[in-house]
Image (cartoon, one colour):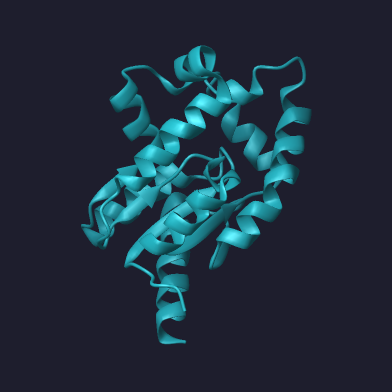
Amino acid sequence: MEKRGEAIVLIGFMGSGKSSVGRELAARTRLPFYDTDRMVAARVGLTIAEIFTRDREEGFRAYETEALLQVPRRPAIVVTGGGIVLRPENVRTLRELGVVVHLTADDETLFERVSRRSTRPLLQTPDPRARLTELRQLRAPFYRVAADVEVDTSQLSHQEVADAVLQAVENLHVG
């Protein structure tokens, strides 16, 4: 049996609501909040988009793994980048931190949400909608393997998702 921490770790595709729900959970639980994307940007001194431009996705993923290893092993809310599950060592670390919650949404909802900002480096393509679907389908098995529980955010507010996450985590601890 693997040793599991007490953090609530949010994984999922871009636009699934990880950052917003993570902030809501941190406010409600009064637990420390860690966002691996923010940690990487602060450490490197560049935006995520600039890191992708300069160091490509592989460089970003290396920084992301380093950031994840710096998250303290304690009760906390941890928000990750959408591709963090692509490295097996990251999945092991996520599970060591605590309960891994996969936030998901349908493609239409994800695209509508990510279209609000043009800063998504992996969607800077001639057909961002097709790229989103392709990436989500590619990553779906990785999310399933990493997650203890899944919450569909498509029709829910951030508050409702936070409720569902807390309930799912509680059910895991009771069961």
